[in-house]
Amino acid sequence: MHKKLTILYIVSILTAAILITGCKPKAVAKENSEIQLAVFVPGVLAGSPTYEMMDKGVRKAAEEKAAEVKTVEGGFNQAEWKSQIMALASEKKYDIIVTSNPAMPEICREVKKIYTDQSFLILEGSKIENDTVSTFLFSHLELAYLHGYFAGLVTRSEMPGANSDLKIGLIAGQEYPEMNQKIRPGYLQGLQAAAAGAEVDFRVIGNWYDATKASDLAKSMFESGVDVILTIAGGANQGVISAAKEAGKYVLWYDADGYAIEPGTIIGSGIIREDIAAYEQTQLALRGELIEGSSVYVGVREGFIDFLTESDLYKSYVPEKVRLAQDKVIKQFKNGQLQLR
Ligand code: RBF
Image (spheres, helix red, strand yellow):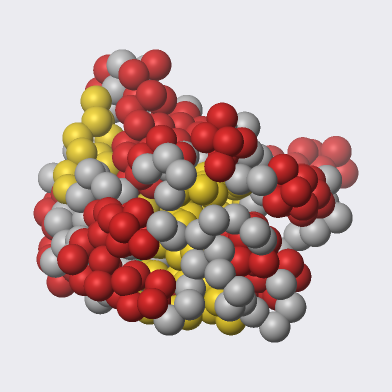
């Protein structure tokens, strides 16, 4: 009798466990040939390397499993993104919709309230409690710190484009929480570590495509004593490059290898490995192992963020003294001595 009760007890616990875990459906659990994935680009692919990396990563994982991918460019009218995501979800055929930028989690959560079976993965997205969408976030504090530190070394240096003012610039497409709470503070913190008392001139374009406005802003910044600008403005970055080239000043490229775009003008480049994040998370989804509401937060130490120092162009335009100092701080992030989250 006692034994029977124990068995009953174990069976009921197991049933409860199955029911509880069963409540958290996994993203994908089908035959590979039936799997269809969607990538939603909140903007356009051209000129925004992180979006291109996302698409590339999803496609690589999909190819390995013969799954299909549909990529939709949402364009620059942000008011349309929600209805575009809603339209994708209403098709009820995409096992997961992958997208990227800090504004997307909220939009996807709202759509998820209506299409409850639709799974989402949002790169560059922050989690909330009891989340219904999966997010993958990179430490912008760390990447911006590395740029700020490098810009501090440059503005203090004897490089041909550097003047005696300790002033650096940051141009953003838009102001958004990640920009104001992570990128700007990280950039300033890095700058102060390399050049105490130096200033950041921060300007906002108001969109992610207006290269003419970006160029005007950059010109006025250079005229006011800025010698190096970090530009985070998608397609509008081109305007910053042309202004810098004309003025003999410098540009930092934030999140993808930019050295070859304008050698000698783009003298520093960071990278966010959004392709690897997209690839690995899509692989998880394709195996049915991406748990809804999961979140990941990574930085330099985990290998998803870096400042690129191996390029010959970097080596030829940046003096050794500056490179050695930059190497030191990168190493501190890599070995965990420095960590900003
Ligand atoms: N970054 C881009 O490179 N291109 C874009 O079109 C773009 N659009 C954005 C729209 C919104 C609403 C927000 C919040 C951010 C956008 N970003 C864009 C910034 C992007 O998510 C990321 O922070 C930066 O590209 C730096 O990696």
